[in-house]
Length: 224
Image 1 (cartoon, rainbow, N blue to C red):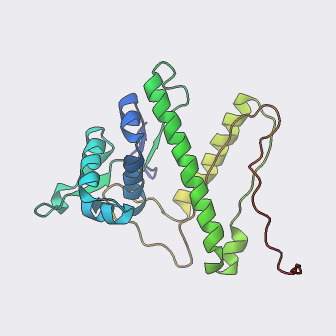
Image 2 (cartoon, rainbow, N blue to C red):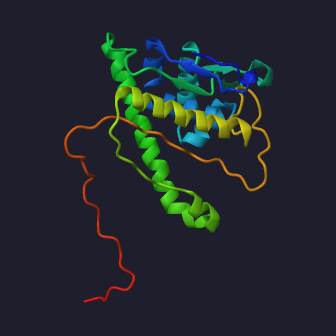
Image 3 (cartoon, one colour):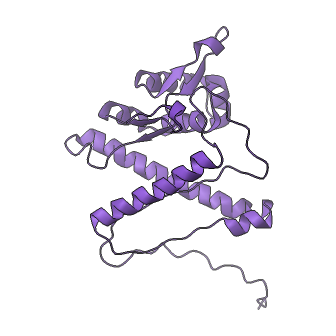
């Protein structure tokens, strides 16, 4: 599914088997994420941002381009400096799209796991840096979970309703999406880019708990 940014919706690509195989690579996933979040860039700039070398970024950008996930901005290039941008703002696929294609299904599973790692890293970064933000941001932010009992239809309905709420905030309040190839619009004073992750899936049996972590430091505990 693809929507035009001109209609007020972010452009979305529903990944096919070839695209998902190409994207299921650590550096390619990071390259596409960087172009989507920060806008067009050269292979040299991306190498600096991602801590790798220009040869690697150039090669993997070409692989993404062959899959239709990034495009070259020829009008911005000068000499050997080639500019690249994301072809779409978002990508998705249905969980059952690749049931009859084991290699594509494995690639989709890798992308899910990679996304979860990124989500956890971002949440950890927020915990580490939250005191750099004003109190109003720290009070507004939230890390929470909820256990419900639903049918598949109810779960799908709930997710659709949540996406509708997100769309309302995305388009009616602050235009945070950068159109492919465009410049990010000026943000109103007092705003920040906000990450919101949505995970929803059925569980059976006891809810597994994370491995124990070291005890939190007690500021008033006596040293013995």
